[in-house]
Length: 99
Image 1 (cartoon, one colour):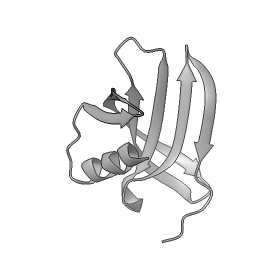
Image 2 (cartoon, helix red, strand yellow; image 1 turned 180 degrees about the vertical axis):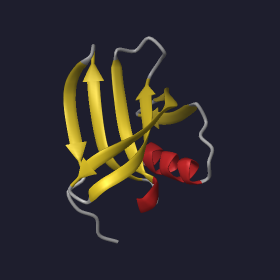
Image 3 (tube, rainbow, N blue to C red; image 1 turned 90 degrees about the vertical axis):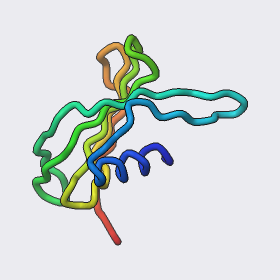
Image 4 (cartoon, rainbow, N blue to C red; image 1 turned 45 degrees about the vertical axis):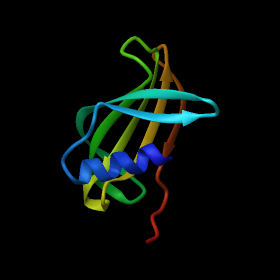
């Protein structure tokens, strides 16, 4: 979750490093983040313009997490999908937003 918050802040500031590192248990893990473009999404909050960001461990990793961030909502993630070998593992979509 801390990386997603950092991505939100970086998108808001117009910059995003390509690699984020986290410590998990006793090892350092690097995750590559790339901005893949924009899309309009129909959500429970209405139609939203979004920025698509993908995350993977390496350029050849078959497991990809894509997240759709809504600039008009302060870059809150409104959708996420994880695929492995092109097949959907899971998807989440925003249902409501309370501030």
